[in-house]
Image (cartoon, rainbow, N blue to C red; front, side):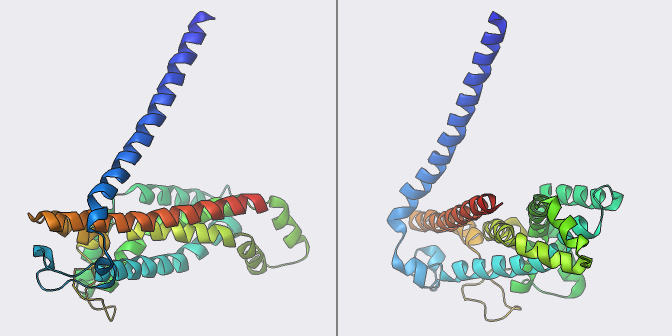
Length: 280
């Protein structure tokens, strides 16, 4: 009995310590970004593109990187949803749960979910070379879409699984086709779809490895899919590589902007998830 109490106390201490360690790490990261970046954050950074010599301490901002990140992540999320939604519906509605192909497909997406983003970037770069596509906004969208598709498929899969089984039986008992049943499911998972979109967008907007070889970099806002596009993670990377303290401070300010983006996405995802659970 005493041994059990000692073990319980030990694991309780370990859990509390782990929680405090994770929380402390989060506050240290956010605190470092705020302390070092806030003094350099100004209106020009949000509303201006880099002037000549911006990375050597001259005037300008990172509007090109902000817009480029939205373009890349938004385009990739849209392309990923177009592919992921039919896949998730097919695996969960058209195929039976004990189907071997369905189980293998879900396992494959789990494996793809864990592959580092640099691998997706290298694969997308090889694909671009084969197709004759240069580093551009289109290349970045393709690379990030490959990265977020497994995330969206598995998220939608979890959402569809939690739809009551009675709904499927009721729809089929009325003589509905599988396509009509898919449309009924679509109405039920709309909140979950928004959660998947936000998660994919958050992953895409913060990724650097997948776009390093595919999106290129430009001080201008891309006007077409075939022009190179800057992203906030790449802008942070290049600014931190500068030996000029002011430029390094701007890198932390850019990181603060990116952190605010991610914070907004996390809050929205949490609210939508809670709403979906309440409705279900």
